[in-house]
Image (tube, rainbow, N blue to C red):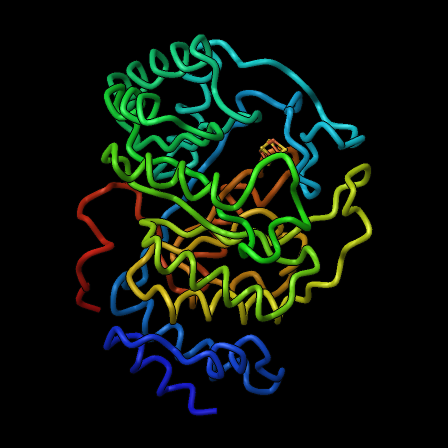
Length: 335
Ligand code: SF4
């Protein structure tokens, strides 16, 4: 496999062939350094050595009406997680201060549930207005399905970005959820984009999907053109229907991240949930394809502390980018 050719194609905006995608996903162990080097050539062109940190707060936990089989907060989950209704404004604001302390460039406000109620939306809008006034940090919200009106209301309140993941390919989607469809998810993505919100839209791998499904998912994401592409690696939580599905390896996760970079050269790519669990001692290598990380944990699981993330980034010769000084997704940087 000519890995340098893949970087050239990505840099020239040429999509990889299906066969090339498959070979990236099946990169043998002794070729991983060549693969990472090529992915890094692409990452370096558009993002230099900058790493963007994100910190999230699960502002409403559990109690969801949906049956996503991977999720500890779903109605079919027996997982022992904390369950609570929407936090009040003060606590949501405190999370934004904590994100700033963690040197995060973006504060991600995430709530469980199919869609935000009008009351919840009002509370969140008010909290976001205060965050923007007092702290100024970028805000992403992830609140489930939107209508056109709700998307516009979030934009008006100062929300910068909306997260809504595709999670899986259209073909695989019925295996993980029956209470909504892949197309339902695409619709919300379109509402967010139409409202002028930046889009964070990604995937969750390791739920039993094939390599073909991984490619289809990444191709669907490429078509959607998100500003930010989080890649979650399925962390099997006891009490969920998929609790025994656990086969990802650190190298497979790196292969997936590299493929995501070749297909989305200018997009912010972030290994998200399951990074610590699945990539383990190889985590520093994610910085070659990816340019963004979560610190301090996920929805119902803990993660790398901000201090350990800073150290890892520094040790690898990369640097934390705290300020939003330019629109990175559309221009190359000098390195
Ligand atoms: S992923 Fe979201 S919509 Fe699905 S069960 Fe979990 S909280 Fe509900």
